[in-house]
Image (cartoon, rainbow, N blue to C red):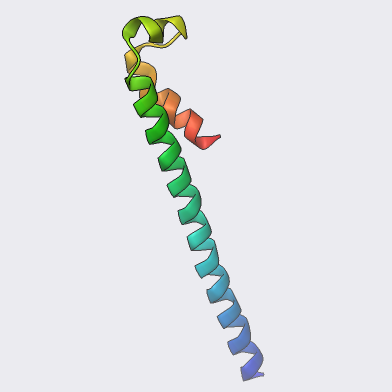
Length: 69
């Protein structure tokens, strides 16, 4: 019975470890998407931003939404 308990505990640990790195990979991808979008929109002029219906103050919110998709 002890061996079965140890095997289950180890399995749970490795699942938690795997899930941690999966979450880390997703977080890194979202962060990368946020910064890429932010840099692109920040390079636009106020006139270009207005043409697409944005203000400079909207950039961070739009980038956060884009990163979560």
